[in-house]
Image 1 (tube, one colour):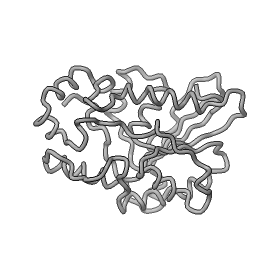
Image 2 (cartoon, helix red, strand yellow; image 1 turned 90 degrees about the horizontal axis):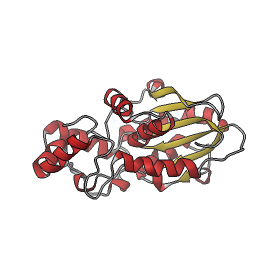
Image 3 (cartoon, one colour; image 1 turned 135 degrees about the vertical axis):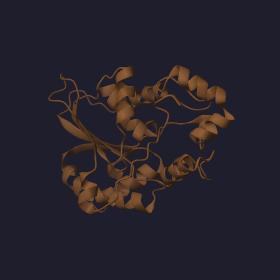
Image 4 (cartoon, one colour; image 1 turned 135 degrees about the horizontal axis):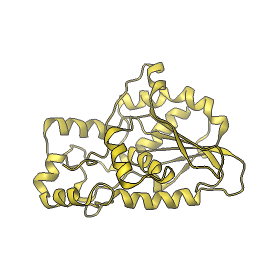
Length: 247
């Protein structure tokens, strides 16, 4: 899968206003996350913009080796990439693909864990029974649904017979986790174990490599934030998917 790629970089967007609001609502025991705009339109926080700018030196050094850059259509991902690129590359050099959007939560959108339990206790029980990978909230997506669109994306963007090359994807924590699931061929149990003990930090860099197209993918680096420390930018860890473990 993924044609002749032998190196893939995955970046999660910088901290968003949605991340801040969701974390504050969970900490306060509120039922609803106070946002009045679509998830697709949520932008970066001030810290998120600083984190995205901190990516500039790394991306400037990595850019010459990249054969392609793809980005989620959501505002927070596009803003992260735009700030990280700075004046280095015109916007036309990257491609927005809707299959890289964040997981859709359906009726659970904007609800905290408290709110979900209060309003939809049967759904919480169903989620506990089915597990993270296969539970689909009404009107939303399971992780398995997201995997289907990622397999489609990875198949369509492959280039059989091409020279060895690298690519970059800027998207969301669920996208990072599920690309690992696909390319590392993780079982359901291995994926959930990994997700329970690993969180994709905002503006972090995850790195996948393989020695040739005939060899399996390996995880060379996960959620690296060294560039944030060098820039003096804050490190923020807002789990976008909070239901990995049964609640």
